[in-house]
Image (cartoon, rainbow, N blue to C red; front, side, top):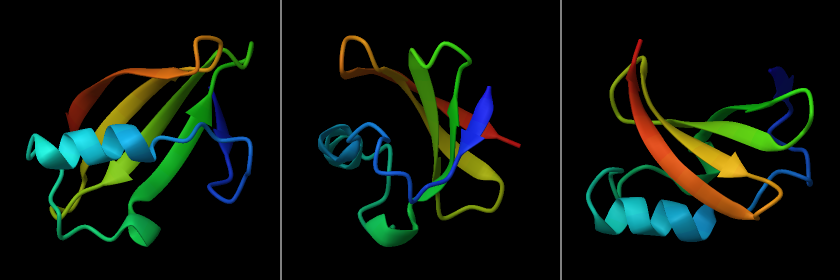
Length: 81
């Protein structure tokens, strides 16, 4: 996995999925979208992205797994580092 700059324009558009996570109360509505993306990682074949979203708790993240070929978010994981 290689880290991709969050300013990279080729990152998958996760915002519709983020809205679903907020509606399901997995992500807080208080979290600012401009500060939400913490890190983005892409595998060597560039098929998948792992987008880490910051939460209100320190070292707690929501990781969204994206299939770039299917152009959709596959799911999420809660990470407590």
